[in-house]
Image (cartoon, rainbow, N blue to C red; front, side, top):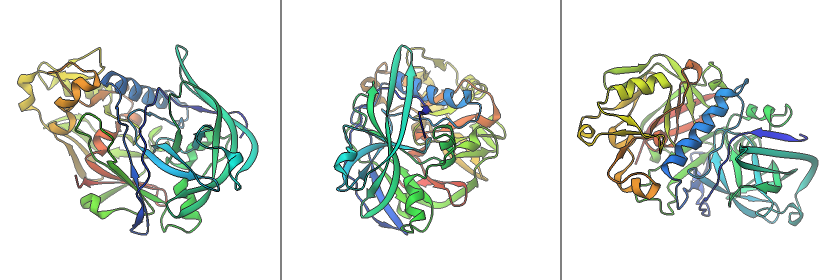
Length: 396
């Protein structure tokens, strides 16, 4: 793994962190996820989500790990012996773990093993460079009382990280070949499973909306090795990972229809379920059809989001995604930016914005991405054992 390059985008991070709350849950362990105290401005959210998708769309293999930090959740993990606690961005769009040397010192760990290999990550743009690099190690990682050996990168040089401690990826581990010269590196949940500490190579993820302008809320949970039935209602709809490229390189799913009310926006297509994307992004033709159906809807070039005239808000309809024979609706209240968040996130007070953005693509193999604004309403399951994704109504 010499000179490893991660072709992903990372812009400035200002994450807030919390110690994990853990307990046995359905054959696994449950850990708290937390959102930052000061979410990114609306225009930054859209720009970063677009960069994530642009990296995916431009990849010839569809295997570029994707990371977005300011508006992502963090997970606390102990590294080394004795454990050094780090708070890492929780991302299902990548599959590697790396940490800043300021937050983890392998020389202070009796269990660290230097692999004698270097790695590097390059993010951002020429005008806004962001990068990190260093040595590759293995060490003991700990989540609660569970410990396992994990391969990780330690960043000894960096530029533009702005307080980020690191990233832990939970994407399919075959994302790793583009970053590790052909070697699949197991994720923490893979290692927990292979060591026999959990019964299934699966994670269940729960997000809860932030509604107060971005306080320090421990408002997410991840269950390793199972699902938490208290976090969803009804049953889980499972679908196999799509065969359509490039979504099949990620937690990609087939969708038979996307509609706004009775207006079909897209027929059969494929896209991605991603914890690291904030918005719900649709292909350009679907976005055009959506906002053509709402009189007066306008693209706000300042934020990159669409605005809705005040006299049309009460007439808005649900946006529905039919996946695995089940329809998952987003109500207007769920896809409109809460009015009390608009000014605090850099929008124009009194203006109605939506969380539905344009990915700038019409390819059926990458026609949508279901980010946090979808997942705050639906419990998600990422099942490596059975190569499938599950969705159920969140118990908010």
